[in-house]
Length: 402
Ligand code: EZ4
Ligand code: CO
Image 1: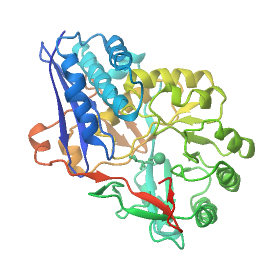
Image 2: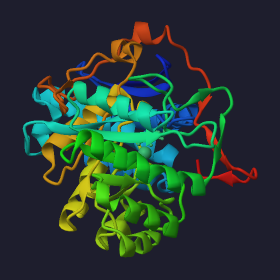
Image 3: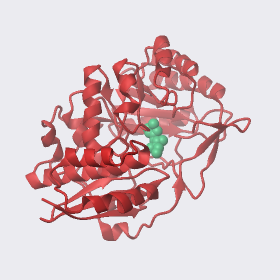
Image 4: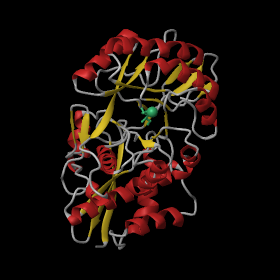
């Protein structure tokens, strides 16, 4: 089953996506998400210029060998661009494998470990009362787990706080938006939000919160401690993750569960975090951490250390990645939760898919392979537009972790 053809499709049905499509000599196609938010064309070039020429003529069934060929063969290891490209190839090959055997991909990983996958949605508002309303709207849709972010009194805009109701898109066109940040104002604003949410919704609803890597370890420790009475499902990305041992300090001070990993590219980025049990959830994604094959290795390491998964699933992860994540989530034992930020209708039309949402849970569906397609004619109607994530500056103008 040789790979006969391959191409990268870049489109922007509401936001940018880069998608790898592989075709075998027997006419089976496979899709892999290669989207790297704000740096999409770098991965498209990595694939077209440096990877596709190596794929043509190779056996599509040899997924592990091809992964190692691209990882070890590059000499330059890891990094977001390289790993997104490898992820796309890996995901497309699993799609092909499933289709060629006529089974959904999760059946290749030992079958379903659960009936369906718990997901969380993003509720946000400019102030606490608007955020309470947004959480209520998500509850009406059936969500059992909701991430809540609120505007910070005294700051004009905050990353992660959407403008629309169900959809929001963090990436802006052309040049990055500049937000203003104050850890002092932020730390004072979060506990009252969760106090109010618990009062309104009781104890049963799972509540999550994302710090977006903006605090120092001791500030994060304080936030975790202040939030303990409200029993969060997790506190996400409390500090930048590069210094893995900094989580030790947070851990010493709080029982609030910790999650990190959306910017990680490989098992080496979270090895210490997992082995020292410094986190409760590892949030690596299929597209940014080496595809389904590598995510399964991370999950196996995590399982050994009682760490569960919580794959990243924001709008910049395409429906192809979402499907791959759901097959992974359904099959592994130590699954925790899956992020699910809804795509726009245009995105859903460009990527018809078999996965579905019902009553706060998702299922990848029973279509062979990943169960996602791409309508290339429609995709061509949404050309690429340069877009970036916002940046953050402190009140005095100093650049800050976004
Ligand atoms: O900022 O996906 O948990 N979700 C998030 C996202 C990320 C974007 C980055 O591309 O933090 O909104
Ligand atoms: Co996040």
